Image (cartoon, rainbow, N blue to C red; front, side):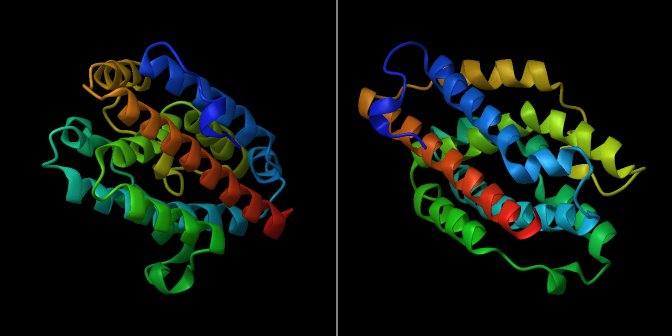
Length: 218
């Protein structure tokens, strides 16, 4: 979707990131799967499969967090209040029952995504922060729109949608804090370019996953 030469070349790193993520959110909303899911036109099993794929992705990402906590740069982005795996597991227990782990499987696009996280985010701060901010800042922004749409479309009550709920986190204030930390990260130009390129890769992998889900369910 993006190539390095297409990325914003100047300005604060946070502004460059917002430019990429804004375009990514627009592409996400245009995807067949999200369009149909957000309007309640898919069976609940389709939503359950999205939750399952998210679990695989976030398990990889949060394992990377554990590996990178002591890194002087990556450690600045350690925010345990953002962790999604516990919430995803609660959703999966509701959707699939207590033996949910035996009822889910990673799709090929998900496997590719997780492999990229393992290759890029476990030993490089630029790769780790790129995948971290692409997922969590999107969850705190466009993800809140999707969560509200899913809640209304599928009439969830107290369970099934915990992934979208960040207890004790003010999304707007947290995003501002996160972006300020990003702008004060002492990266060289080469490191900034590597970070932005990996953000673009993470966005593309997420859209590939949505495309595969769309092909399966729409």
